[in-house]
Image 1: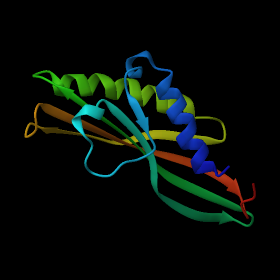
Image 2: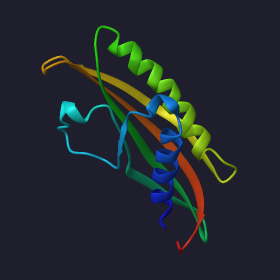
Image 3: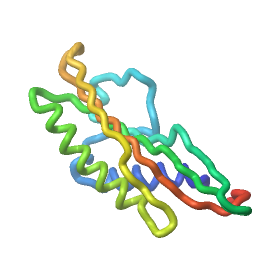
Image 4: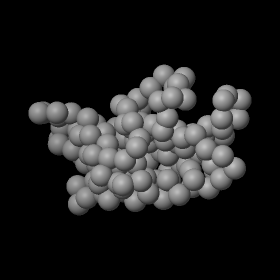
Length: 139
C-alpha cells in the first residue's frame, strides 16, 4: 500500500473512532456539490506533495493532507465547526505524528452557505505531513 493511502486510511479510522463523528458519512473525496440529505460528511484527501532529495538514497516528502467536514446547522454553525476543528486537529496529529514523520496543522478555513434549504458550513483543515523515506520507494 502506498504511504499516502496509509495516511488517508489512518486518519479516516481515527476520525471514525471519535464519538462526535459517529453520524458522519466518511468519504475519500468528493465533487463540489454534496446533497444536503447526505450531510454531515467528512472527507480526507492528499492532493499535493513536495519532494526533496537531501541525501543519496533518501527523500524528504511534505504531503498535504486535507480534512473537510460539511454540516448543516443554525445560528451556532461557526461555533460547531470550531468545536469539530479541535477534535479533527487532535485526531489527525495523534494518528500521524510519529518518530518517523511530523504532522502539523497549516491552515483552517470555514465557509458558511445560507442559500439552500438550511445553512451549511464547510470546515477545511490542511495539514503538513513530513516524512523521510528511503529511495527508491518500494512496497
